[in-house]
Image 1 (cartoon, rainbow, N blue to C red):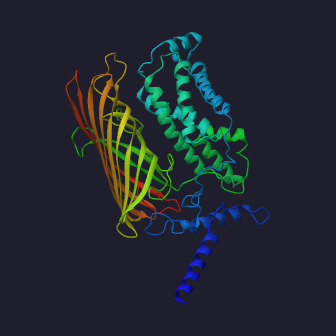
Image 2: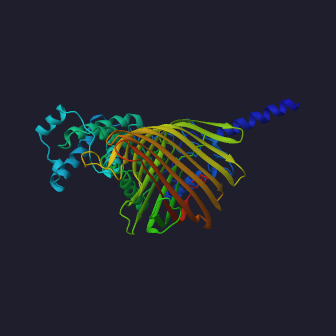
Image 3: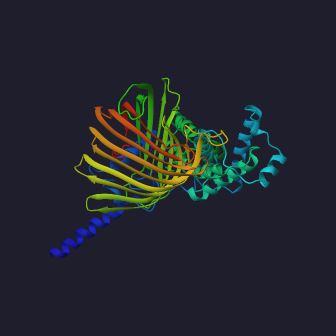
Length: 519
């Protein structure tokens, strides 16, 4: 009798759970009340059912979801294929060429730049010539060109193509620009850096715009979402207008999304004047910083490119320093492939990542494209306290690194092209919402292949502490140390250590479904 009762109880619970499995997105029902109220109830139910459990790495009710269609937070794993159907090949091709035509027109008729005057004769010269390593300004090569690559990439991505299918359009856009967009010789660095980092940053912009958009909304909210998404991803904004999606209202969610945490910093940035000083006299600037953490590294799911990424950008202005620019740094990584596991109490993600680095400091300029392996771990110490660590080791197929005191042999470029390796570690002890202590260390080993011969070893150390002031507002202190050990064959070895200090207020905007504060 006991076994019979146990069997029927198990059968009952399995039947109940199967009946509750969510197999389709929650849909607004026309004729059943106010649309906005229905949408709010859908969002509230999703947040209630599929928010991270205390001390856990994912929602406790994830078993209710059809995980072939949804992530553990109840969001679509893929854009709705009917609503976001793939457009004919000629459309993204035409748009890539259109992007180049707009840049060409601007360079020639508005900027009136010398390199903008192209003709069949310049095209013929470029096609018959061997590419070069160009002498463009550092920021143009390592920020401007990757952004141009995002436009090519999103010409396809926003027309129904996935990440891998969109990558060739970034390559094609870069190649056609190099040979036909300017009268200067094609450059190797642009043909590598523009499409590869353009695809990575382009996917980040696509994912961010998806999190902003909600085609179920109307009125002022819809207008604000469309404008914000268009600013983040202009090509997608244009294509939404052309496809009629800007004003189309749906009854269900149609975009792939992941939870996202946003951390905002604002404060003062002090730059010490003299080398090898931990603290000293120096210039002080105003500083703002934004960090985006997209996706949960410890959620059990099949990983796709950039369903997990971090992007951090810092800007400062003021003071009299002329060595470091307004853009202090832009750094980030995104997963390409990965797998989750558990070792005892430790949650683990291992994967292959793409990295983007741009540093503009008083000690050096560095722009790097990287690929490598990474390991993320979470060690829970209590329901509120966890130790988060991620470590990376990768190759750098192409980087630019300033020589600072030694221009190239032609006097045209104050940086060299390099390849090498990088190692990175980021570790944060999170004491819930009350405080955090973090240690970050990056190291780059670079060998020059174009420019002044030599090598450079660069280290960046960044300890940080934050203490809660009020709710999600914290007071923080961050100390930066930048070291270089540049060995040039034609010049004496150049070693330098420069430090910065930053005091700031930090506003942490946590996704209502995500509880991990590993920022």
